[in-house]
Image (cartoon, rainbow, N blue to C red; front, side, top):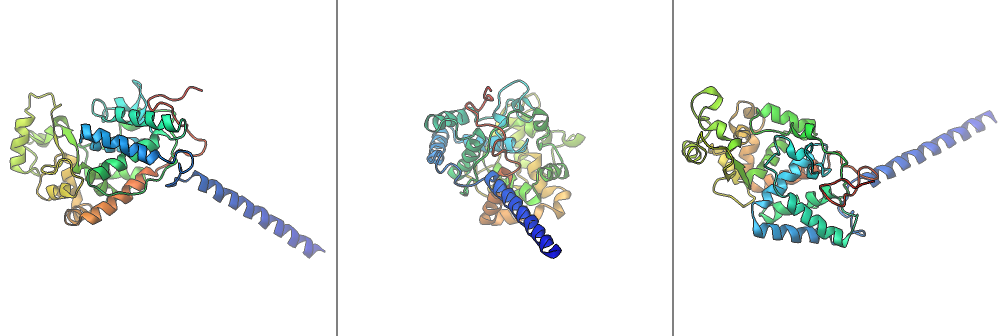
Length: 334
């Protein structure tokens, strides 16, 4: 009887443990992002977003890079929760890396209005921005991938976090650490930097390389001389720093691997671009990847897609966390 009773208790304990584990697995599965999250609740969401991104690019091809950058700056601060879209003087939009430089907010608002008209209260602003970023890459000639969906929107902006976004003026080690801190590795650093194959940058983001680099009274020696001359004419010392030029010389609007070819020829625009190839730290970390991507666009596309999916899956708000904002710039009133 004692043996039988012990066995019975053991079986009951095992059964309880199995039920707990199954419950945890099911709960975890429900919280994960999926490609068909809106299959029933808003089946045409991908088509609606694509149509509006196409319209935006017809008016301004530069918007592709702007939407992609907006997505990066959202995900690097508290995960991809749409917090960068929140208005307000204390919001992420007014952090130093974002102030007067974020573009595409009105496009996201327009997409949200279209989606709300068809599927009210269903699709998050965070997911809309993630889809729009993918479509921006694809419509610029880049790779396609299936976007994981099911994010919910954050309730607060994180301006402090936004102040710590990777900067064009930082060392490779500092930038790599910031990527590592959010779960991204060295390959992700190089692959995601390839987004600079499209878009523009203000003189203020690179004019430190043109005249008195690191107190040397000379330009950055890792910038090709003709490029230095061209940029000195565009961005004189007396300029306010707001003029813009293309990030990827000779391949302005096409998402390709030309960006990496530029780095091999000392034609990276931002300091954070060229250090991937020319810095001392790069010799044993990122240089080989730059060389590989410059000669193999398929490898670049594959690694870029992996990095985008990885970045989009960093600590997403799911389940009952956060909310589905009715207006991307404002938290829903309770």
